[in-house]
Structures are given as structure tokens and as C-alpha cells.
Length: 150
Image 1 (cartoon, rainbow, N blue to C red):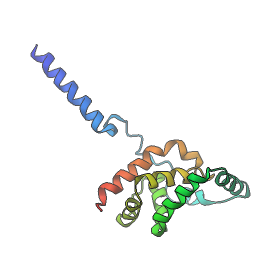
Image 2 (image 1 turned 180 degrees about the vertical axis):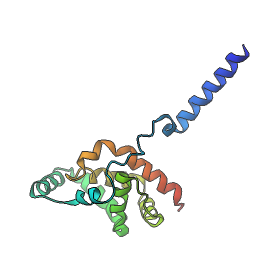
Image 3 (image 1 turned 45 degrees about the vertical axis):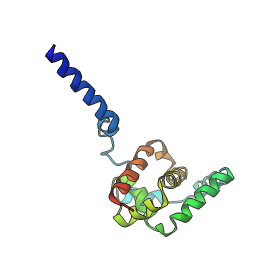
């Protein structure tokens, strides 16, 4: 009877911890970067005529309200500058952005950060990673918001 009680208590605690910290329940698949830093990352911004046409078309078919929302978000993050590139680099290569970049990201707000990055990963050069980055985007947000207290 005592063993059964201990087992049940352990099981309940494990279940509660896995709900509170879902990342504990995942295998460490995030250890491997999606892109290797250096030359492989640097080639992502190469634009060909076909990719440029795709990007223009993709922006044209976005709903006007969504475009206005993302533009407003980008205005909030206007001084972000190179930090936007560094954020994408962290998402793809696991290289953490600086505290200053985190501060700019957190000031814009979580929803703006997520939507802006979702849009960035619709561009031709990054769309191949779109299905793999949603968890990483949240991970970057969580790290930055924990690091920076406004």
C-alpha cells in the first residue's frame, strides 16, 4: 500500500511538472541549429529574380488589415535595425542576441514579435524553415522577456 502511495505521488508530481514546463517533456531537438552559422547563414539573403517575384506576390496577397498590423508592429520596432537580423540568426543558428536587441524586441510586445517573425519566414529565402521555427520564435521571446525586465 505504501509503495502504491509513493508511486502515485511521484506520478502526480511528474505530470504537474510536465504541464508547468512543457520543454522538459521534449527531447532536445533544439540543440541542432537549423542553419550553420557563417557561410550557410550568409547565403540566405541572396535574392534571385524568381525569389524576388515570389516575395512581391506574397506581400501583395496579404490581407490589408494584416499588412497594416504588421506595419504598425514594425514601426514599434523601428529602431531595431540589425537586431532583426540577429533575432532571425538566433532562431536559425541558436546564437543568442544581445541584451540590447532583447530590450527592443520586448518593448514591441509578444504578439508583434511573433507576427513579424511569422511574416519574415514567409519570404522565399526563409520559407523552408517556416514549419520548424514556431517553437524557436517562442523560445527566443521567452529568453528575451526573462532577460529584460521593463
